[in-house]
Length: 309
Ligand code: AGV
Ligand code: CA
Image (cartoon, rainbow, N blue to C red):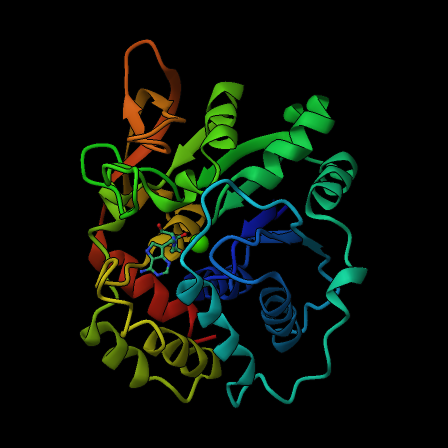
């Protein structure tokens, strides 16, 4: 039986590439997708999500709209970028997507899907964790329905990627957007695996990879993925120049976990300046797993194979 999966993403280019990657996975049954308005504006991000479902003939998979806004907003320039995706030649002429305000709210959809699931569900988070925490606050008994949470989040033995006033640079953005919910998720003590910057730093989006992907562009998913990644190469220099395969790596963990080095640690999330959103190791903290390394050759090969479908 395929593994049941719920995904919450935040509309970045690599979030949408992650959704596309999930849709190529044979032994995963995606039962719902919710969107957090963090690294995106919600309406275009819901539209992109719907378009990817349509493109792969899976538009029956329900979408949920995040209405909760975190404490520390993402830079507007980042949030605006994904809109480009909806006008790419492969996506622009797909049938019109529904009015985003007809979708259920994200926590509502998460509660609904967890309650009705016939088996335990894996939850993949490629943005902040607020929607999941809101859902669990409302329906704490649903904790028992969660097999594992896989979250692209945190920075442990490396610097963060937040460069902001009142901040020392130690936090990763998905945690920083809503440090309070992040701390609460960790405190829940659920089976939690973080894919932090420590490991995503090993997998930049490189021109060599994009060139190989382009050499197989007769496969339409390779063509689309290549165009999406091309949009990331001018990532705004004043923040962080390199675009990494952050969410894609977290998503790949579902399919190729044996290629990752995983460590069990105790950790805490700070909620205050100067390090709000920092995830740090502390013996008094909560137990969770972090990925520290990955077989990069295998990972890039895996992506090339999946996008050949
Ligand atoms: O911190 C990584 C997270 C991932 O979920 N996001 C991007 C990925 O979707 C935030 C982020 C960090 N640096 C960025 C980000 C950048 N230069 N552009 C857009 N988003
Ligand atoms: Ca993201």
